[in-house]
Image (cartoon, rainbow, N blue to C red; front, side, top):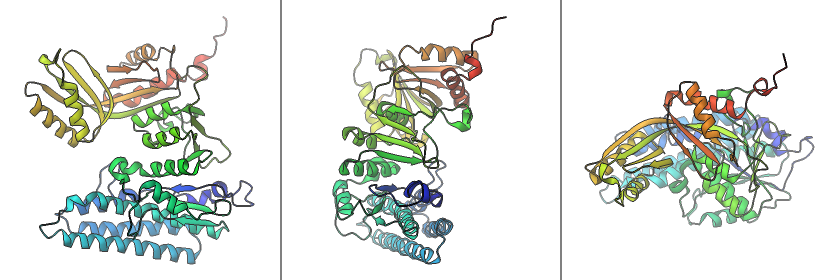
Length: 463
């Protein structure tokens, strides 16, 4: 989104630059870095406005953080918008939204100074209010940019700003698009939609894709397209090299689900479910290569067995060892209940007679709370947590490729110790659990066996 002005004449206007292309709906996320400033940094955890406001010990920090958001928004649209009148409109928009949010937070802070009101009961609402500021800003700026280029763009704000009513997500979408003429207008829609279900409660920062998928389903779209700044590729090119990665091209929703499970942002699994149920194919394209069709995701079976992606994730193991577990029921259910209660993402799992191990993608702090619960439930058990790396080989059909045996042999040859492996009967993924500091090496090795360099597969010449 921060390179929006580069995409104006390729993504929004006909490739020959002659006319706008209507019959489409664009759902936009916030500009790069803005949501991190509004909430907290997704990777480092550095607190943003929300995290600072939730910390009642610091009454001043969130004010400064909100000022920083306003400055960052102005800097971003100042780079994108060249017309002074458009910049002024965008500045006024930011001022109205930021100061409106500030007033709301101040009023709430005053209200919660009375004993009958509890701030923690309002935190999710605050998180949604703040998050919606980012998408509203980017959608408004995109609309200004396109209108200046003679595109009949229309700002569709689903964030519920100053809306006194409450709607379901489907009703919110229907209301926002009710009088849009898709033949003559290009709606630019906020990725965040305020609704009675509370998108962030279930999806947290994956809400844009959920809104996007529900709009596609409700409008009966021919195709849903996610525009990214890179192709959906066989691996991270920064890791294995630009010359070694392959564009996926065509895959299915099974693979998309495995990518989501591994933390890759192809599409949120609940968003994929909406598209899948509505029989709408999903396309992932590189926005900066408009002539390339990208990767199509649908229900088509693989024409032949093949690896499509090798990826990895830094995770944790939660291991429960109890000598008296064998033959006794209830351990599994109790562990799962604790993981669910603390909102822990389970990537994989294995068990034997007296040990149950979950491989999870979650903060260590949250896992410590699970550990405490399980120690209380099973006082004789040995509950342990450790860091681990999971390297995963994924494809629509891996049957007959012997990925497990070949991968183990290649990793052993590289002196990488494999702590555990996981392979399901559907043959869509194989996971190798290794030390975290060996994860990148493991991914490169597994990618090499799945996608060998040309010189590695060329027939040897006769002597």
